[in-house]
Length: 270
Image 1: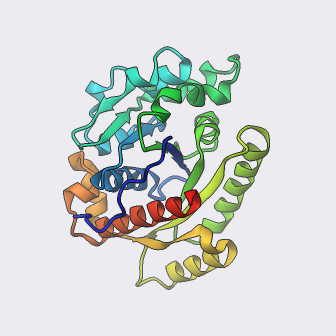
Image 2: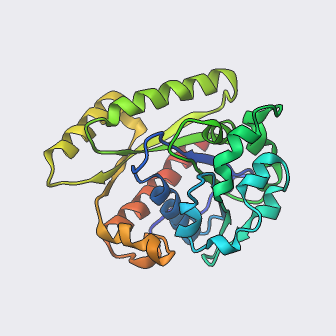
């Protein structure tokens, strides 16, 4: 279904991308799950780290709560290695570090811990040599869990819903990124902004897309993710949309997005 995607690169170290937006309901987890699935379909070896206490990314790739014995919570607290928490999913090439509701208390648990913003990064050296891509699904906030993801990441992928307040929320996120870059992770960059839930019948969607592109230029991916009922249905079946219905417009858009992400990464590495 994704034969046209670019082939795996010869990179020697995993590229770490955190998928974040402090606003909920923007398609963040859906983007994480489906981009990961599209990448493994072309031979990439991918680790998906679920840092959202809701655990929706874990559910979305078929990891039920009963199978999450060791999770990202134990990794963040230093009670387990990343490898010990990793589950090989039923999707070939895709492994998952699942989330549990325990993550909701991680910020309190880490209050007095040294290097509390570096807990995930400190746990990742072995994984960097094992995978081609590590994708981190963040909670809808700019708290300590998202901060850990940003400190561990090479780049940030921001799903942005095509709605009235989109740019206002984005400006807050961009300021946070600059603070993280200046004080904790100088290599962090914005890999791209992906416009989600785009409704071609709604003039507002087109206006928001034009405004975002006007402010951020080529940081905005050409690919736009449309509103699509099949994307919404897929998680209830424990499947990414690409496996639930790879012919729907939403799945095809995520295939195009993965193609665009890999193409941009190749150009950066050249």
